[in-house]
Amino acid sequence: MKQISEALLATFFPTECHLCGQLVENKACGIVCQNCWDSYLPFKESQLCQKCGYPSLDSNTKPYLQTSQKDCNYCRDMNFSLARACGVYQSVMKANVLYLKTSAYLCEKLSDLIENTLAESNLLESIELIIPIALHQDRLKERKFNQAEIIAEKISSLAKIPLDKISLARVKPTAKHRLGMDKIDRSNSLKGAFQVIRPRLIENKTILLVDDVFTTGTTISEATNELLKAKVKEVKIFTLARVI
Ligand SMILES: [Zn+2]
Ligand SMILES: [Zn+2]
Image (cartoon, rainbow, N blue to C red; front, side, top):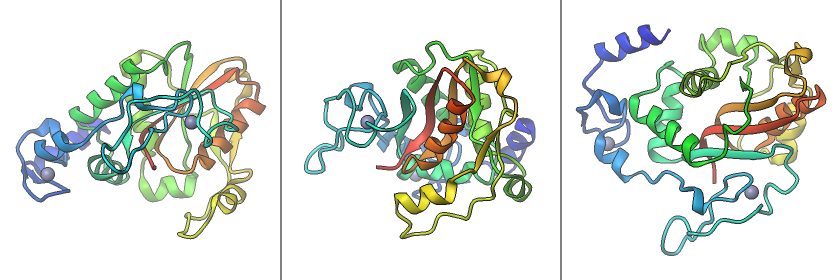
């Protein structure tokens, strides 16, 4: 899959930046030009909620404040132990996440960003298995691949931690989330969406659950809940981007 995607990218390269339209001159940059990459601010560990990774915001002056807190109002009741993302779901990261839904390819810049985020945080500490958030089979047929799996494969190969693509399944085809759905609507539409297929293989293990975007946290919480019900020891979360 990776070789095909690289060949495809090479065919269409050089390409126009998906954000500003300038020519992308360096293949390592993928679909976004160097200038746009340079203007993107990835999260810094010192600016984040220590539990869920939500940045301390100061909308007046700087995008993020240099303060971290133990947990924020947002995550106090969330069932995972730790969550981190590379950066906010805007500009560069939004373009890359959208592209990843149609093309199973992570450019070098994105891969470096994942590696840095993992190195800065405690996310991989004691992780024994990496599990991507599953897509329902119908959606998988449409898309041909699961974008969360592409990210999980990258982390697995960077960290040399086994990948488990089977244990967590999506058994309910969830309706696409519509604008105006609040957290409770989203949560209800996801009830029973996931099922653990082989509980014995994950029992008592510390799991890294991987997805492309952390939106309201309802998908992640529902999947985490199923894993914890199957007697997983602890669940940590990695996403490429975080909606703030
Ligand atoms: Zn650009
Ligand atoms: Zn938090």
